[in-house]
Length: 306
Length: 310
Ligand SMILES: Cc1ncc(C[n+]2csc(CCOP(=O)(O)OP(=O)(O)O)c2C)c(N)n1
Ligand SMILES: [Mg+2]
Image (tube, rainbow over the protein chains, first blue to last red):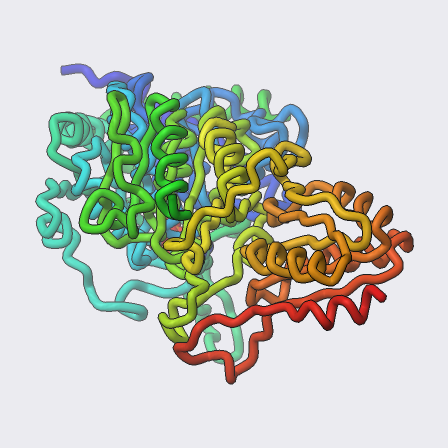
């Protein structure tokens, strides 16, 4: 079966959009702190493609990929980061709280765990009003350490709420790896504690993700209760910092701010392995096709951003 | 009818007038139903009463999610202390929701545990602090007239606020001022008596003490106006200051433990206006010695007030 090129183009549009923002960021254009999400595109594109007009999406501090996926205009995104009146939210929300209610992205929170509670309330509102659709809420491997993660899942399960809880597991919380800060948490068993189905997404294939998320969404709508989805990924843009103690360079995980070693180019691949959704697209569609799409998109997006 | 029965009737009818409406909280529809406060609230068609798990942080956030989803709600808490676990939502989520022009109403109704025997924990009486965090509107309810006006209004009005009720008053006969009560600024203040020698303004839940003071002053031949300051963050102090300008003396009572009291702001406003000659502030003390299970004492001596006014 021929693959719908739209999904691949979206992955590239997100990557190039973030790279353009990264260049502006390196040039110190922004005062608001932006958490880029290069490496997260496959999930964001699949989630956005999954969403029905009745669905709502709730994001965290790292929301740029979802905002780009829900918004065809890169310009309004950039204008928002520049806090202009023409910005997506008229410059009122900036980066970490950026939402787009007209396109179903109703809330983003900069406070870890905070958005899960709000998502539970949004889902309860749907249930009370007998409205169709699901609530999708994105959290991280760091945010899920908060008590709100436990409480919210308990609430969603207690009232049989149509929620898809998406854990973006990039293995890091700021500069700390999971094993440097906590025990391993068996999310599958955690979900089982609430009788919630659990789904693991790996491999950054947006087509496979969309198919799997469709069945997860169906499960959430059929009930009872929420579905927990863990997506493994890397946040690309790490670099090495040379210091006296680390003459070879100390590994710096990308968390926020400009990614100094990422360069906008005609070929926006960052890593030639599965951690880069672009590499995965090359395997699916052939490198030349992906390169051609990237070239055309770059021209359009740069024209728009200028 | 006692105070808690009266409040329950107000909550029931105000919730019944709203559809859809969700009333929720721990034990609100089980056992004593929060000492009777929540019995039968939101029991109608298109209404939901949820007896929730113990998850205050999430529960505070759920109300904001309901609000974003266009559903009005009230979250009832048995103790205002428990709201401490949801402070992030009260500040951070509210700051998002308030700029999104919500159409739904969300009220957190908390019992302020001010009777004293609960001990060193579970005796928080700092309503002003919660409201101060994100300039949340807060309302203290102490009697028949204020609750009959404010509860239906607040359950209907889009936006978020906290409503505080006093545990100390639960089993007491509900104060009823009948025709004497006059609401100012839509219920930010109420005036219950008009006098000409002093103005007594009661903050937090000190209205019973204020009423006793007025009666004591009257016995000494001195008539006083009596106000309650229902809004924790009133939009202006004018109703009280105008009255105090006329009477020449202002007595401010505040029985909260906060270091951030309405009473302070009122006294400062009176001082800055320069028009009120005599100002007396009586506040509840709060020292390490006050931290033990013992009845909360906040009494105002008529003699002290007379000395300042004369
Ligand atoms: C309550 C709270 N504590 C701490 C922080 C600081 N903080 C911001 S992002 C972050 C890392 C979160 O990790 P994760 O949820 O895995 O998201 P990621 O940044 O890895 O995408 C931390 C600790 C915060 N925003 N909120
Ligand atoms: Mg992480």
